Image 1 (cartoon, rainbow, N blue to C red):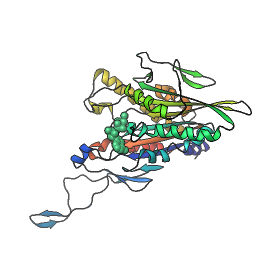
Image 2 (spheres, rainbow, N blue to C red):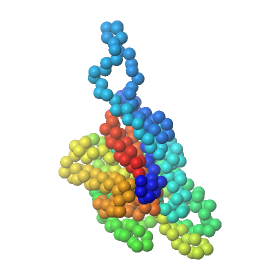
Image 3 (cartoon, rainbow, N blue to C red):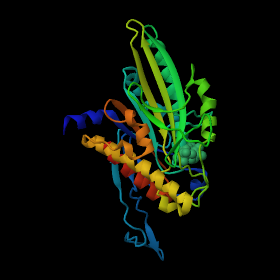
Image 4 (cartoon, rainbow, N blue to C red):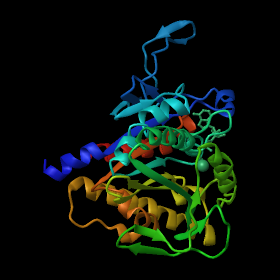
Length: 351
Ligand code: ADP
Ligand code: MG
């Protein structure tokens, strides 16, 4: 292993979250295809208990002709959050520790990855009863900032944008005109014309996130009435001025609710919708590519291949901390999506 590979190992954390079955899946008495063994391991497509099989009152040898063989694949991750995990539990195992790295000057990023309906937005935004990790992270940020205020001054600005069809839009100030990306030698990647909202408490965030989320581009498709094809990017810019030296430092925390990872082909879309799908695959694909190249210690990372990776260029790899949260449904109906997500997460976990 090269030095840089080992370095990356410390910098990317992969957590899988399995959501509970929803009402529909419960009604259908859906088979569960993810078995959480402990807080690090899960089994995909576990073997079912051998049930005695009777034919005309006589117990038969257990030959189940109809059922294909179960895969029974073991996966190990940095953390596995089971069906009963709360958003706070997820926060505790993902972004909480990141914030001390942020204070030390590392840019940090968190992704939620997974198929539509797997629980990405629930994890990130949640609802008023179960606030998501964005709120919990910001609340903790304001808490730890307190302990640094003796020798630093802070200025916190937030933005909430979406990448849709390879265009960038402001979710806090909706407009049909896409925003342009710029690279600034001092501040890194900037979105031109984007206004940052100054906030002083996490509370101020709740409405902002909820309203911003309503502005996300959504289109009903054949496969999913609420399929979300946009990537939502919440960014926190922390400006710190050290009181003794008056040295200025800017760090960024990015929290990204990725578009659904299901394949465009599976949704049976043509024309404009198909183009959307192709572009989403492009951003997801190049995100995966960049992560893999970073893992290999490649000197060339193809950040320029998509808007999403250009936007996150200064928040991935090198001097950054990254958490990937892979969301899956345990129901049999999502078998392929779940399998694909686990494979994607396992690849990232090798890093
Ligand atoms: P995605 O953003 O990945 O498309 P959502 O976060 O919108 O998926 O989740 C789909 C549905 O499942 C929503 O109604 C959401 O409230 C619910 N859900 C997701 N994860 C959980 C969870 N851990 N606990 C309870 N409900 C959840
Ligand atoms: Mg969503």
